Image (cartoon, rainbow, N blue to C red; front, side):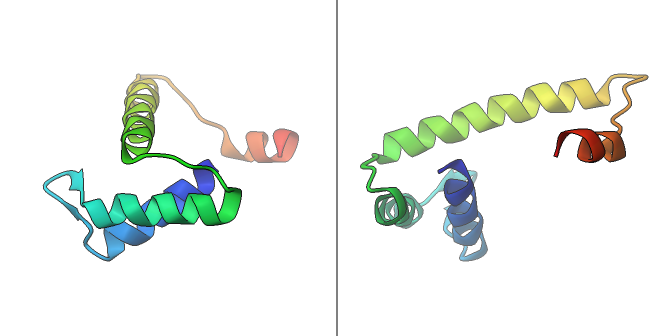
Length: 83
């Protein structure tokens, strides 16, 4: 479900349905319709807004970790052993 949410929001951003850092109502309505069509889950625009807030906090945490001196991310080892 989170992948569909991210994909729809990315598409809405490409349609300029995000302005001044906030999503337009049409973007929320599109996400609500898509999630219901794919998963028969009823969500509100507040649910979507809260999920975006959570993603922002996670992004901040990961960005802080990656910016630390000496931090090394070994993508080739992760993909080889875990995926």
